[in-house]
Length: 515
Image 1: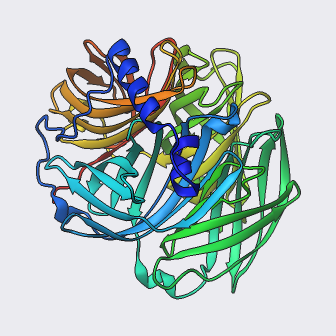
Image 2: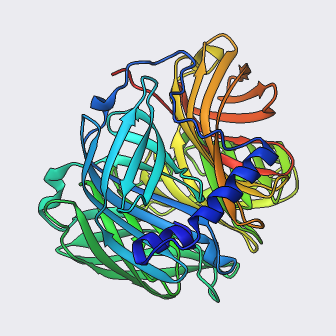
C-alpha cells in the first residue's frame, strides 16, 4: 500500500479525500479512471463464477503508492485468504512492507465477485470504510493474476490455491530459490538465485548474487520454522556471503513456497522456492527450445522488460535465439544470435546451475545464470553491470501457428509508462480466434509519482495477430498499440511485452481452463 493506505493499517488515512479528488482530476486529464467494476466479456471462456474461487489461497505482489521519498513509493505485500465459493473471504492474513515499516499479520474481513470471463475483484476491509481492492483474472480455480486498483496506488502479482496437507510440517526437500530485492533507502538492489536443501528446518545450499553490478558465488545457510497449521504461513532466515535476510513464507504446496522479505529497514523483496526434480543433471538436461520473460531495475524502477527464446542442442551449444526488450523506454526487437561468435552453456550436474553465454547480433553480450527446477523450467538472473534483472524460463512444447492462439487466456502486465510518467499494471483477458483476430479486455491501474495520485480504467480493444513457427507472435490493437510481442511456451501461454518507445511494460499470459 502507499503511505496513505498503509496508514489504514497503522493509523488513519488523514487526507484520502484530497487524494480521491485529485485522482478524478488526473483521470479526466489522461482518459483513465472510469471506475467501472463490470465484467470483461469479449467472447471466449464464459464459464467462471464465484464458485470458481473456493478454498485457501496464497498471494504476493509488489507496487507503488504515495511516497515519502523515491524508495518510499514502493511496497511489497503478501498473504493468505479463504474463499467460500459464495463471495465471502475469511481467515485473511495480510503482510505489508513499505516506507521502512513492517505491518505484519493484519486480519481484515473480505468479499469478492467473479465474472463469467474469470475477471473479478477481491476486497479487504479494515473497518471505517477503509477498503483495499484487488482486480483479479483467473486462469483456473487454482491460479489468478491480480493488481491493486482502489485508486490510491498500483501493484501487480498473482495467487495460487494452497494444499492444506502441506501445512503439517516444515518444508523439506531440494528447492531452487530466487529472490529479487529492491533495496530500501541507502541500500542497493540485488537478485539471488540458487539451490538449497531443506532438512528438518535446516537449510544449506549454494547460489549466485548480483549486487552493485557484480556477480558473486555464495554459500547459503538458514533455518525455517514450521508453518501455521491453518494458514500455511511460516518464517525462514537465509544467510549467505552478502548477509542475512528474514522472510515470511506462504506454502502453496510441498513443491512451492512464496517469500516476502521482512527486513523492512533494508529491503523490499519477494521471492519463490520451487522444488527441484530430475537431478543429477547433464548437458542433455538442458535441450530444446525455451522461452523466457524477465524484468528488473536499471537506473529506475521497472526500467527493463525482456522476452525471448533460446534453443539448446543438449551438448553445450545454443543454436538459435530471439530477443525483444525495452530498456529505459528504448525498444530493441528481433535480436538474433551472432553466427560468427558461438553461444555456449555450461551445466553443473549436482546443482543444476546452467551458465548461458549469448553472443547477440547487436554485438552486446548477455549472460544468464540459471538453476534448473527441472529439464522443463528454470529460474535465472541476468549478469549485467548496470541492471538487476531476473525471470523464469519454460520449455516449449508443440508446433506453432496462428491456431496456437485460440481460446481465452488470463494475463497481467506491469511496469512504467515513461510517456505519461505513470507506473502501470494491467490484468484481464486475451481472446484470440485461432485465425489472426483477437480481443482484449483488461483493467489498467496506474500511479503518478509526480502528482502523487492514482487511478484505474477498464479497457477493451480488438486487433490482429500473427504467429511464427518458433512461437514468436506479434499483435496490433488499433487505438492501443501496434507493437505487442508474444513468445509462446504452449498454446495460449507464454510471455509478452509492449514494444512501444517509452513504455517499459511486460508480463505473462496463461490459457484459461474451462470450468
